[in-house]
Image (cartoon, rainbow, N blue to C red; front, side, top):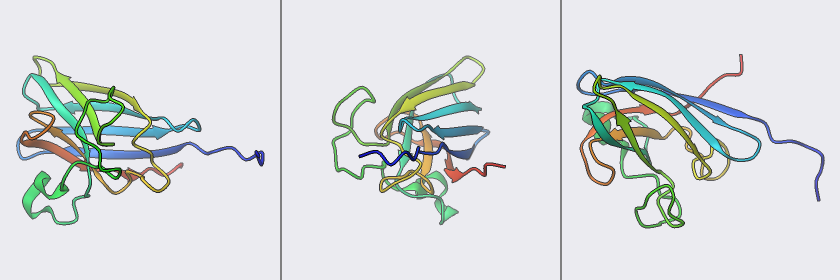
Length: 149
C-alpha cells in the first residue's frame, strides 16, 4: 500500500584521474523511478573502445592507483556480461568510445547501479579500462554523494 511518500532524487559525482593524462568528471543522478543516469566526459584516452565499469572498492589505499579498486561490483554473484544481458555483474556498464581526440562523452542509464539502498555504488569506484573484462585500468574515481546545495 502506498503511503503517499515519493522517492527523492539522489546525486553523486566522480572525478576521474589516471596514471597518464586521463582526466574527467562524471555526474550520477538516480531518479524516483530507480534508474541512475551517468553523464560526463573523460579525456586523455587512446582512441577507440574502453570498458566502463563500477568496481567494488573505493580508493582508500591509493598506493596501487586504479588497481586498488578491487574486482567488478557484483553483489549478486552473476557472470560477466553486457548491459543488455539479463545476467551480468551490476557494475558491467559496457563500453565508452574515445574519439580521435581521446575524448569520450559518457551517457548511460542503468537500473543496477543505485545511489541508495542495499547495493548502492556510493563509495565505490568507476573505472575506465582498455578492455571490458580484464584490461588495464587507465582511469578511475570514487563515486561520492553530491550535496543538494
